[in-house]
Length: 358
Image (cartoon, rainbow, N blue to C red; front, side):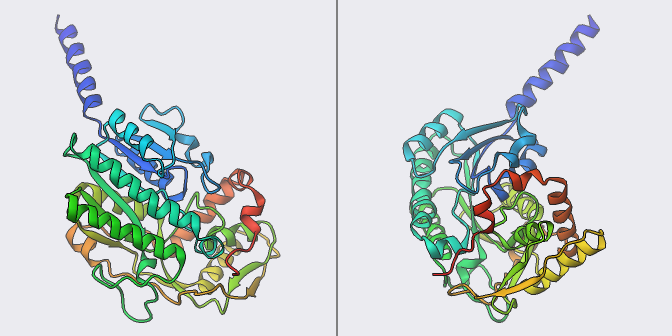
């Protein structure tokens, strides 16, 4: 009888824990930051629904380790379709949504701005409209909108706080700035439970090689010269993606509704030095490559420097980046070398084609 009672209590506890599991939606979960965030959420015992429209930068390779996980589900969905978003919210009843569904490559926005306007502005508008309807039935719901430091524009001196004026320089940055304003307006007007994060340049595993660091890695592995825009001295604040995702989770759990949070590492390094660091890592691990640096014409409107003041999240939410650039680059190189199939899962033209020349 005692054994039966213990077994009953164990099963009851298991059932109770399953019922308590918080359900989260991540939009853009087949992408770089989205898939890394899903990994973190699953490790923290959340039930995660991945919404992704499956574009050129979406990659099922990024979520292969989640397949079969009873706490993970994928739904093909475009955030520009409000009707479908509304149905999903009504059916799944999530407690939170992280919006990472966005066109994000500056060079592509220079060549073709329309997809950025459609996805980054109209898509966010549709999300907000669907959430406005859903929130009436779930007052515990929270919406975390993930944005970029590029909305502030060139920062030649000092570091930008959350109240710094927006001055976006590219169609991409302008589309993200617009979406940030939209999100805040729905908090101010409709009292939606939103929070906005503006993060510095991410790098790490699963990043599409249209971006600088994975492109350098791909080229070194394949003995292709490494293209560097202009004089290579454009400075960015680099943050390892795992640190960023931990900050997002901290904002979801502890952030104040209606607030903006900068997320940065306080480590600014120019593109040329990043390239040099990567060459040194490959040399250190005895990887022989014939790649060399090749300076090419700069892209139009290329901002010289971005730099965030992240004191608000450091002090208010007790978050701090832990992985420095040297260690993060080594971890990143190691992942790509151990996952060469990742590059094979992409279309070669999306890796090597030069964009942003207009």
